[in-house]
Length: 358
Image (tube, rainbow, N blue to C red):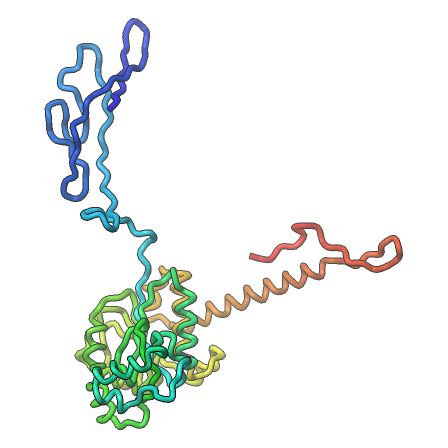
């Protein structure tokens, strides 16, 4: 390596450099370069044991930088390509309407015969297997997925579906078209069927996994199938979008906030009642993607979530109305003039004459 020297004397100053041998480096624990403590070197700096008199050596400090871990190279780590995203867990319900159908799709009888039988039937329906997130086309699911796709790359969303046939499944899991529902079952029958599918146990395990926020988009039957009681422990702040009956039946759990949705809220947000949970969840995801610092306010027990979302909607409409008015004014700025032949023609405004409001 080259070490800079400054020699001063007789009123003359000049810089000199000379080569100093550097001992071979090695990689120590933590992936840092370590210089062995040999004669002529000290930790953190390079120095010469006996520099010539009157010729001080100026040696820079060696700064140790942690190595970056790369895939495929043991002991080396790669820096994340982008900052950590907020992790949102969404638990929603299946719907009767599906994007893929088959005359010999699965039924409740198939699921009653166990997972081995279901897997055999799935082999016969291999061409129809579809990720759960893409299979359902009920309005709640459609609106929810519209919001999920809209925040892709800004939020890390994890979708779980409570299915009356498959149980609690990930949104990425490929499943066959099926017809099975919780509707029409008595309480005891519904609970027995949910236990057979393993829904309560899977739900409890899922709630034990910490996220920045958890959303429940579940109706009365689906909440009952999850077996929610006072023994449930929530590892994440949780918002349940549900009806008034479900809100009364849910136990007071630490970390749980219920948001009641009914006909008044459907009119308030100009959305059908069937789709309302998906619509509110999509709005909430959008707000969090735009303003991540809003999370503590959203989960605060004194926050009126619907009012917060409504204010955001009002502000967005006002901005859109102003932009449209400016655009209309811009179009009207082209005035009619008369050319040399006496005919009317439109004169475009000067470039930059009209600007949309921010």
